[in-house]
Amino acid sequence: MNDEANDRANDETINCEPEHLARDKALQHAMAGDIAHLRGVGSQLTTRYAAAARAARIHGSDLSYLRRLLATTPGRDSVELLLQLLGEQGAAAGEAGLELPLMATVLAQHQPAAVLAQAVFADVPEGDRLGELRTCLFHELLLRGVDPDEFPALRPGSRMHPLSWLPDRRRALETAPDFTRHSANGSAGSVKTGLPETDGRLDPPTPRPTEASPLRNSVTVDEHDLILTAVEGNWGYAEAWVFRPEQPIAPDRVPALLPTLPMDCVAGLGPTGRYEIAARPVGDIWSLLFATSAVGGCYGTGRYGAWGRLRAWRSLAGLCGAPFSASAGEVELRAEQCTWFHFETDAEFFHNEIGNDYGIAALSPDGRRLAVLAATDTD
Image (tube, rainbow, N blue to C red):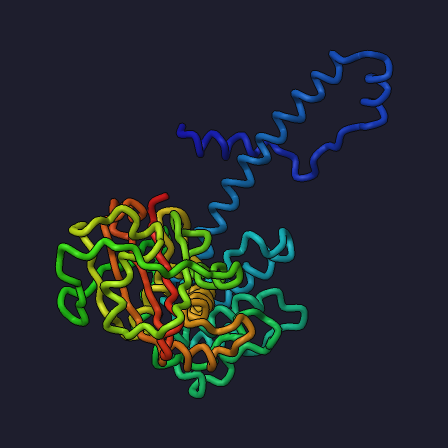
């Protein structure tokens, strides 16, 4: 019998209504100095607690598999049963373990939009606990090309949710979103961080000048945190810098300028170390930020499509210099006016061990602000 079977057999002895500690009696034994009795009680409680924890892990794993199985089985019946189970589980144990953003991305991958509009968004019951699922699902479907005008019921009702900041239609800069692939047994995905082989390449000739730039990093705490939003929590390490020159920087100067700036991501590179850079359209930058957040890396499972979308937009806002209070439309306008660069180096900052390493630079249209994000999936 394997370990899981043993655990299941042991679980059968657990009473659904656990026996509580008789605290008054325990206090009497303590006051009488009968520590041996308390030792026995403590051992018994520890054994019960360990058995209950094993049972909770097993049941949680089984419920997670069943939710995935239903979400990946096409058809309205499986979706409606999934919603029923999610509601029951939420009522029994709270929403924390329901994986609602994950359920939204799995449903969007495996179920037709028409089925979801009928089964998930129509006839929402009073006291419904699945608002997070519906809000996430709306954005998941948008990113997959679903036109909300064809399915008016898909629109989430709450305007107080953080995701309501996002555009209610897929924008032109949201090109080629890269999603994690899901099945009943798990998920898989990777972030494509490589530069194009030829398009937009601006690699400066070597040996490069090594004279340090007089520019100094002036990033604020708010700018730093906003720029790193897409990377936070699921990649190894990232840093952000902002430079504000007195004289405008021309876009064609940026490739040669970056290796001379006081940044960890180019420190120790030298005149001949590998340094590759390309000009990229803003859509390519958004796609890279989206994949970073939605798919994640070795240090996390990612935020999935809806929250990955929000985090990509927030990082884009930080890079293009939009204030935190800016609307999505204002961020989009600023981002489209910036000049964008994507670079890689062999500096020590980038471990270059598993392929997930990149740098992004954004130059404002007036040339007076240069923001840089560097990320590695190895800490």
